[in-house]
Image 1 (spheres, rainbow, N blue to C red):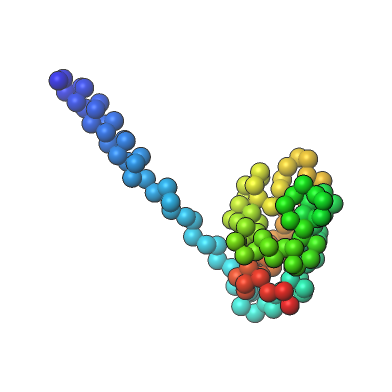
Image 2: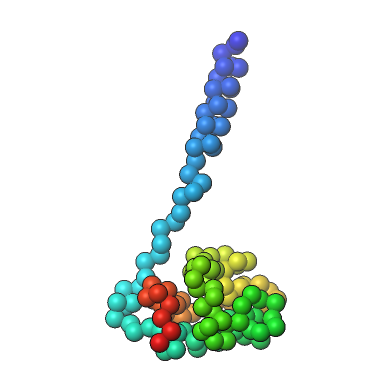
Amino acid sequence: MSKTIILCLSLILIGLFSLSTSCTSDKLPEPEPPAFCDTLQVSYNLQVKQIIDTNCATPGCHRAGSIAPGNYTDFSGLSLFLTDREFKRFVVDLRNDPDLGMPPNWDTNPGPKDLTQEEFDIISCWIEAGYPEF
């Protein structure tokens, strides 16, 4: 076999080996909650309900009869999406994904396109605190 063929085969094998051993299950580190979470008394009733009502439980979204999953107009409806961390996934982990992050940045979305930084920080603290209702 010529040296060129051996070199090409070697490079292909090295490439295949590196693809098969790549870290596909690695996860990004959990975002650090804002420092003020230690001193902020956060709960659904105190701050989060207003954020949810303004950004999530809007007409056509996350309300009874809407196409979006769940009825977020009260804590009991929202809480069904907290136990499996689905809420955190879409609101925090996928925040910068214009198609999957919530609230969505779709052109057809009549509601808010993003949480403000303050709203996001409050939601992050609420998640860190374990989603307290009161």
